[in-house]
Length: 333
Image 1 (tube, rainbow, N blue to C red):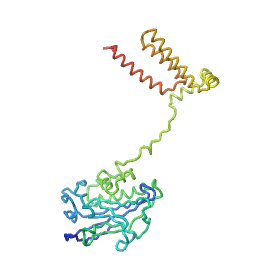
Image 2 (spheres, helix red, strand yellow):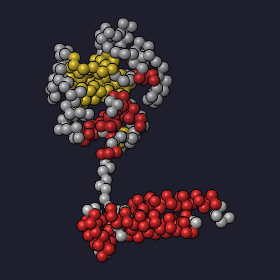
Image 3 (cartoon, helix red, strand yellow):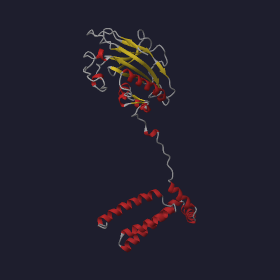
Image 4 (cartoon, rainbow, N blue to C red):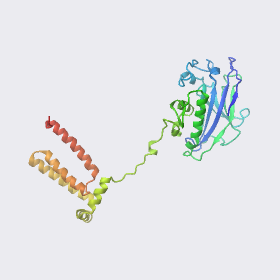
């Protein structure tokens, strides 16, 4: 929808025009019950490129979308407004500074509890000049396209096709190369500039619409912990042996603990005893540690000592053993 009002006179007697192309409304965007208005508009550069409206009126490169000139509108010079009926007679219920001159997107956001009457066909959205700057205010208005959704989770699917269409239309209106703002079904980094100017959190709301969209990592990664394959195999084999059955009876009837607690304690104490005995007897801790590791390995194969911690300990032993070998100069040259 294209509505244009081309009469506007500032105190400097300049004439400017404003254009409102699209006026879309969404609900349940960030929180249940909120409302977002999204507009595609134009403040023709030839009209607005002067010091009366811009703090920086150079605008040397029309293709440089981040040139500060385009976003240097004076406060209150150009606004996006919402009226609860025809703009000529109704009350103003929301206003937001337009982000840039030229072609652009703008938005008005109302948090829950706003009082906007959803679906009211008399409401008008307008792009207009500031009343303090213009004698006759330039204004372009349109009724709203209401896009309902049942919940916050359902809203992205409603917004995405409309947002992509608006950015695609923006690309055509700006007369830039194809795929500059929109590449098939993704908004490019350049196109995202306009979207973020209008509503900075939009990449979080509709992340799949952007090449660099953001999504919560906890929303898609929910692993279910469980026993590893090796643990399952070792446990099944050990449970079928007489040693496991006997240890289970002793642990439950005599000590009132689990089989793993009793069996693991026995094997760990045995490993410690063997390590100490061989270390003292040979004078080499390497032999004692190796023998103690063998005892722990037997306990692991009986499913009495967990596999995971054993591999952690073995890794530590390898590191410490390697350090000892290097420190003793026993590595072949």
